[in-house]
Image 1 (cartoon, rainbow, N blue to C red):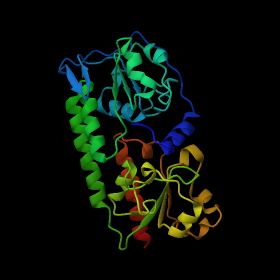
Image 2: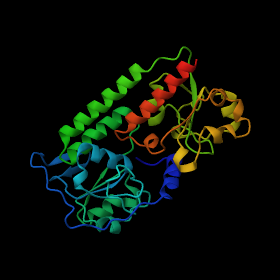
Image 3: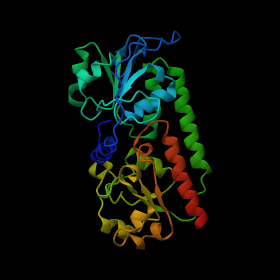
Image 4: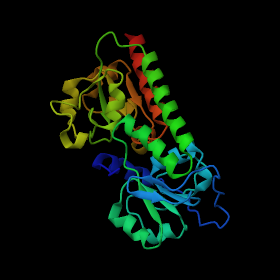
Length: 308
């Protein structure tokens, strides 16, 4: 996907952790799946044969590739792809991709979330295809991209199964979560400067499945592309029932640091112990681990219901 500013900010903060670098390995290519049917066309890209040396420049795609069973074909992933642990982590940048460095891994397919700085054209000169998989804007988009990545890598059946299972798991979690006796409002924090998400974003739509009211929506959920910067005054005035922190890993935010902010100890969410720290990575990706995000929100809503 094309990165929106707040998610770029979170990504850049995560980059500080760094990842170990791997050199190209002559023996790392996996044998192609003889049952795979090629060529396949994904968007405007036609893949003639099953790729056996894949470079992923998208953390969401990396997680999905391994969930599909295509992990043995992945020879390098970008510095932000920190899951699963067995992924071949490198110093490759997804934000400022270096075609020469990428080509050094001798890929036969590169997967990226955006065609940054003409990456596709640059790699095409070396005979390498680039498949751009934009960040999902809805859950349905995510399911569709599971299927597309499956087709592109010779794992179409697995992609279709993964999409069905993820859809089913999310529907069941939502259905099994007790509905609040009264409407609950929430504030979703991307960083300490109060960037948030509206219901028009992928994450906002996930939370909307629980019937929660998003204080960032205001009169226009499309404002700032769905990623508005709120003010402390606006948040205090809205007095949300729940606070979700998607800046816990990058920035050390938790219930205690939120309560220590000037005036925030008066918020219902703080007074009632309803500030919930999320895993930053899971909360910013459209991979199959979105199920874990849905489960975390369900647990929070259930806890609030029981407290009430």
